[in-house]
Image 1: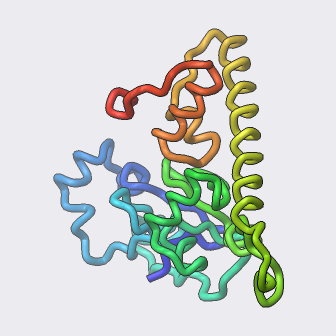
Image 2: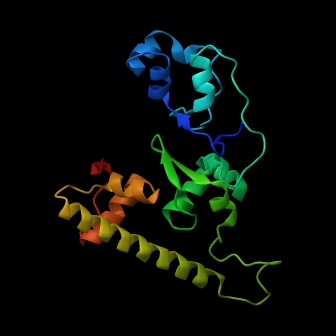
Image 3: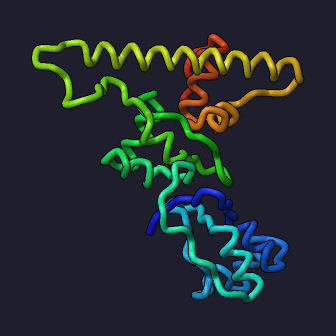
Length: 211
């Protein structure tokens, strides 16, 4: 099963699926057994929060045949962490760690609060320290320093971005939070708080206190 939103398609979460079936809430839909319905199309997400292809969900709600999803890969497919990680030959946990540490690209967009990357973003990304061709020449010693330089540059770019977000929030008299930064940059909430604290010149907060 491929966990992605195919190019040109969109997705709905449990709440959206409930609305398509005329329920006023997820609680009502769950009580009516909607999510246990064996005729539901297969979810297109690997996370605990399920997503369904909108076209398939609409057809199911209308009692119509469920259309098949495109089989051909497309550069604009939106991939979850599991699929993105597979393209790099690493685990989803490692992928998310790489994203948090600027060794992998930030999410292209969030769909129902789940980070997604376009296939092209993942496949075209120049991984820090990577070189075209057969690999690093024998005796070359600059791979790690170069990787650190790339990572530090991206880190500084993110801090500048967050400072701009802080200024915009102050202008609009609203509070900026770590989750706001996380959504904007496609990173974890903990990393979002860390960057926000740096931008504000504050000491890092205990992650357990950051909601």
